[in-house]
Length: 503
Image (cartoon, rainbow, N blue to C red):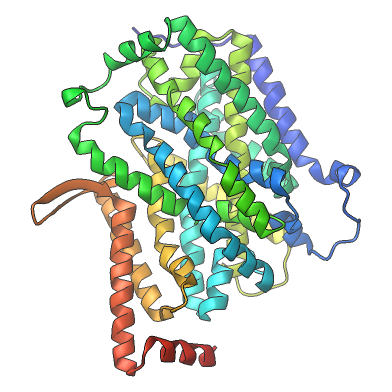
């Protein structure tokens, strides 16, 4: 049975009011923020730094909503339930990945923040350039961040487009509305817009999710009946296992690779570098796992859709159609606005993080310009729009995982590069080239699927393409480093000393 439900004017009206109010609030933040701020009017920050990093002034609460908001995106509310709807338990790989990533934040990110603060760095590429003194490596890291964030922003545009389509609009209009709203919101508000409206976004999503996990199961006869009904529509698993044997390795490796990649993206790192202290980051790492609980509840929406009899040819429409089928029309409109704002806020941070890379690292050195940053951010959004139009991923979540394959190749330079024994820049560049080419090549061969089949010495399984490419990257990097050291006839400490002298 096809249960596609059409909204009425109440849903459309509530959506427009809530969505436009958030855009206007964020777009005009520069006008009313001085009246609420306790900061002195004078500031030692440049206008570009204010637009791109919020003046590095965000405390624990703002950082909580800004950084945590990166996990409440269209990825969470649209893409994860869609994957659960189609594959069952496999779609829950997003839960262990968010659990793994928080200890990583606690241990690594305060050190990166300190390095960035002391050196005046605004991007990962800035940090790499200062540490290795290599313009080529700086460009490699910057280009990886820029390219990786494009499909991630595309996923947010798809999220906004999806709810607008569910409201009855068709053709290219929903995508055009999504693009224009994101462009205006980011251009006018800068990083202060998502930072100060992230609270509104999270409250809206909390309301929508809590209503869904309470009201929908009651409507369907309870969680037991819901799980039983959903099981009838999902692939059978042997011996009562949650995952088929062939999905265990992809599940584990996707969780691990996603955890490694999460805070390498320019937008997540931007949220970290905008914090006012290293302790602010540590506090957030302790309390941010609370987001994982809500993420698990959101993933259950995919199972609820089966129990509610939702049948759709587009998996991205699963959650909107569920809300329309269960909730009153006006509240469905509110939930749609929550999803759209949940895509708008992090997409803005993503565009700003990518613009920072363009202005600081890709273009020739020049004075910071907020107009230049705005134009760079607009160009990034145009590129993301191209990803929506030309990349034909089976699931929307594949766009985020494709970005993960690319951004993981910066792990050796940025994270391994923090170790006391430094790797030569030439070795890191060689590893980056190998990992990037092989990772993207495998993705293209596999039709943008995030896993690739591997068979070796009796082992046969599908493994995360990003993790596989990172392993190749590290192997090439360390092999090249060893070859360079042998060629120079130097110990690691001697090579480190020589690099310091060269810089």
